[in-house]
Image (tube, rainbow, N blue to C red; front, side, top):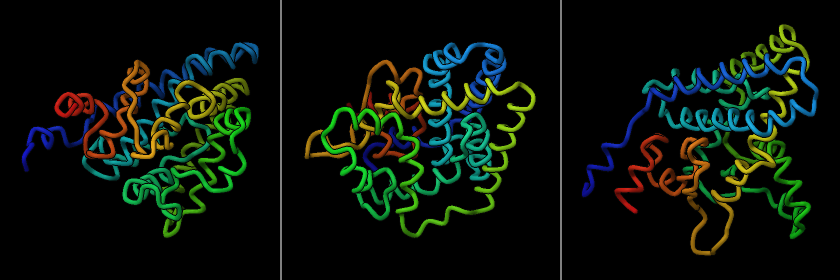
Length: 254
């Protein structure tokens, strides 16, 4: 009531759909360009370029989960599936389901899939090596966690459409371009949310650095290629504000 200027930032940002179309096209084009290259060069390209592309699409999937691309839910779900098409392993619609639970029940083990499972903590312990290995394999742990979350129905018509669309793209890429292209896309997926500077955001967002709070923001230069996903306190306080308006919120309420 006291700050209508904040409410003015609410609402979808259709420009995000243009970002999805552009990045998906670029990533598929790069996969085609690398079709005859050695594996070592494919891995370097996936680390240096592909990881940023796939990570950007995960941010767009996140935007779609909050209906921040279009006003209609179905348009956001279709946008998320398109963004997911280069990720090799389908996850967009399932992510939407448990991510909204995360916002409503942050820190509640049975309801928040962003919270590490107790067995993860025991497995990693205080070992630097195991922490690095855990971050490298973070996509695997992230896929396992939703099974722990209660009252979530993961198998829906939208989930099936998501799986069919992504698997169809996987098959077409393999058939039309050859085995190097899906390898590039898989490595891009693995690096994008794993052992990579971008993967550090899993630690930045919710891991307890100080006892007073469990959500942290990052304001560094990687936000330019990560579509402001670092503005995490801002996002949790006002999840109706899209990525491109979060810096404006920070300026209003530093």
